[in-house]
Length: 282
Length: 313
Image 1: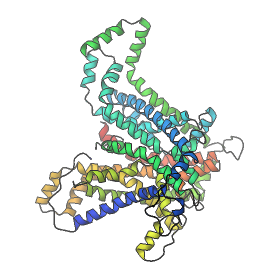
Image 2: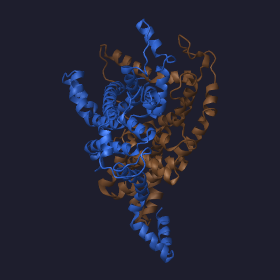
Image 3: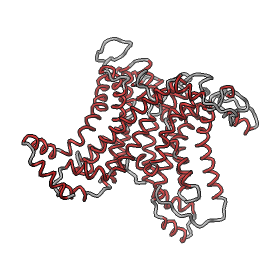
Image 4: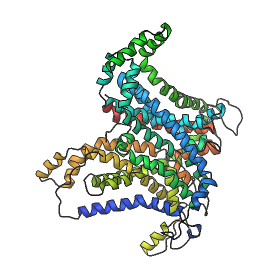
């Protein structure tokens, strides 16, 4: 996303027009479901089945937001999502940075250890969820915040480790070496020299960990029920119903997508590194 | 900086004997101490459950059948000979294959357009990446709102465009519900392809195209001679990453069709979820998930390791 190739010599043909048509259609395709969801969330229930559909509601209402937050316990889900996502993000960024530094500077465990961590990223969650569910039931972590925080920390660790691994490898060693020559311990060289220098990378890794936790559904669906349920699992309430809950579902969706989209757009320039686990520098 | 470092070191040297011995030990094993917390956590919540489920898949662990007797390969054969399991595996392959192929072509086309600079490019960029930050559950919900009869406006719009009444049950009728699931997946993940391929395109040196143009090569030939070979590693990476995520497809199905009607939209993940969590045949589900794991592990070791290797040396 960094360098943009300068526009080349324009040619007289239909190709540029086709390009912008395709881009236009694609933009419409991306924006249309978002618009319709927003439209549904502020539309009075009487307009739902109107024919033709109501494209712009005359009297927008916030009643669905109110119902989604309180009747459907969306507010509780929101608070739980914040608690779980923020804690798991902090843990994942901390443990990921520790491990990545060791991998990058001391080549700990060689390629085997780093690829073992990477392979966790591609493990289908269905493969571990059953035993985790049984273990959680047994040790009392089922439907607790701590249980979900631990699960999310493990599930985001591969990305945190690999993003920071790439970041540390791209950082010169000279400052840390100078600190060691000056008599710092290795811990001090890491904590007081390397970590402050790597702060932008840590923030980027944390943002992607947060988005991953915030949008996660599968673990939350199976490891929580009435106490620690997160925002995405509240959508269970709307599955299979015919009729009145469209507005509530849409309102809940709008509330839930604002934080992750805002963070994602802020961290846009790190996006390529985030999606490829640091393998590609964007 | 230098002075502070020296003072810290001297303070450490002057500390009580036992403390300095611990500090020495910690300093010598520093690299292992750093990896320990993350490794222990992954061992506890990923490796241990995997081993646990391996044991469970060879015994009877079923909320409907008491006892934990060793049953050999019975759980595996129950999965292998279950027609629903075979169907779900086939559907997973078809849905993920078709979705990823469409995402790839569309993502490449958009990346080729976006690689040039034009006014408004930054804003369009920010809009195009939005689906990546949305929970798949919400993506499923958004498309349900658009498609579900009678509320969704899709049939009305199609009817207006085609000039006749359209009454498609997008989430209940056979080929359409597969198309709906694919559209939702394409909507969310085309930006993934696009972002990675765009990064690859911008890293191709522009002078290659200039030289080609001087030689009288047309744009189509330049695409096959320059763009494709240079972009190939990035294409492979994007396809592999996407495919490994696509075969887990669960969330949108849970919201949009609930696996139905009947078992017609069961993917591998949805099948295993149903067997394990709604029928409580836990040992059969773990056996199935091990088969699924072995399949993914093969892909990961064969492809991903090779893809990421050059960057780690």
